[in-house]
Length: 241
Image: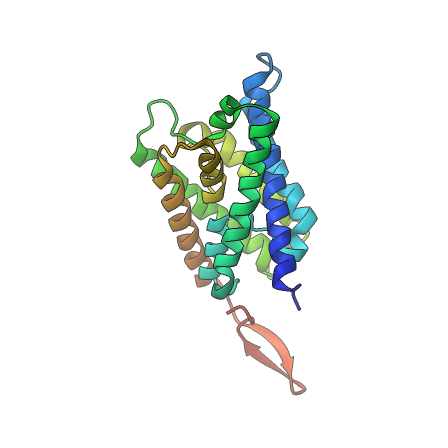
């Protein structure tokens, strides 16, 4: 049996806070420290490895979503109950708001403003939307396999590495062009504290749509699993399905 919902929600709050705060501190270092102290690849590492570490910390409690698009995608993949989507989203927003508040208090408004996600130079809203959608779609496919599909030999223990590596890779290669969100909460929460909401529709709609599509595609490859009932092996869908 999974832990009780309040305990899982608390894990999502703390995990989202840790994931975002580590990544935001990388941006703070980029803004406040001399050139060369940290490069853009260091910021990507902060988000990727920060996510991996928080999954190591709480993945066994809440599933380590820390992302509304992941929660929605796993629901479409029939790996997560639809009735818990909103509580998980609220927990993720709370964790992100706390991370953004701490960044604002520890550093400055200028640093918090630098945390906002924006399309890269010369990148239109449409291009950023497509990039965010595709990368989130691929992200959910990776998560659904390494974290939920027991047929995969890399399922389970390898999940934090694979998930963090994906975000590191996506933030390094696509982030400079799309803004590198792939997570509505990552974009919404600093904007709430900053008071500015430029291009927010991209970073809300594209990841949610990409996550939902990723979940639907993953569901195509799901197979019935065997379980023992009344002394006989029977073929059935997982409980989440």
